[in-house]
Length: 118
Length: 113
Image 1 (cartoon, rainbow over the protein chains, first blue to last red):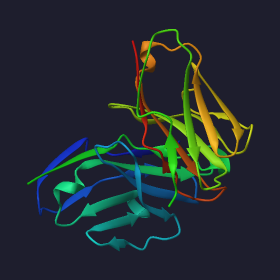
Image 2: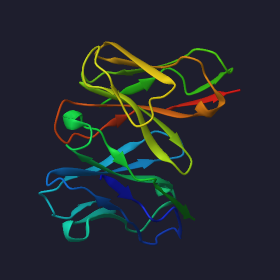
Image 3: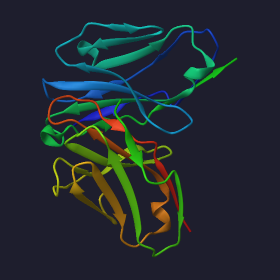
Image 4: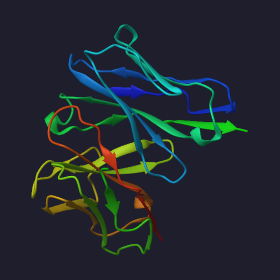
């Protein structure tokens, strides 16, 4: 079965704190892709990152970093020195060829709502 | 920049009405998707299309149909709207095969009264 679990429903931090959003996935495929999306209060999902199953290298982009560990089936997202503008719902998603064939269907976690207070 | 647009941000319809939600993308993407988003349930796939005039059911197709007459346009149709279809509807597109990310429109918040 394909599944994405974001155990943290809501997180609240104070500005400048670091925060990690957890994502655990399940798939039997050896080839799969993982994604993170941000949904600010305006509602539009914004793509943040894609990672394929053969690339376990961690990624850093400014204050954002992602830690992909196949051994624990996790793809966690860390925001360093959080800012109020980071307040949003964050979704982790999985794509594998066993779901929806090659058309690129995504399986989404239920999202983590991050509130960053000034 | 990829642009996915949806015909309305907010829509209010009455029970039993036929409702059309339109989605247009300008990046010549093959794949298009319709999701609904509800609190506590996340995003659920309604229908998707991987080519003109092609459509596939997603996880929750009941009560919905779709139309894709042109590559850039994917319409979601509620044949007879019901109150349990009150939701946020999100359209997305992605290029061909492979692990490409989906690009989302701004969403349509539909209220059925």
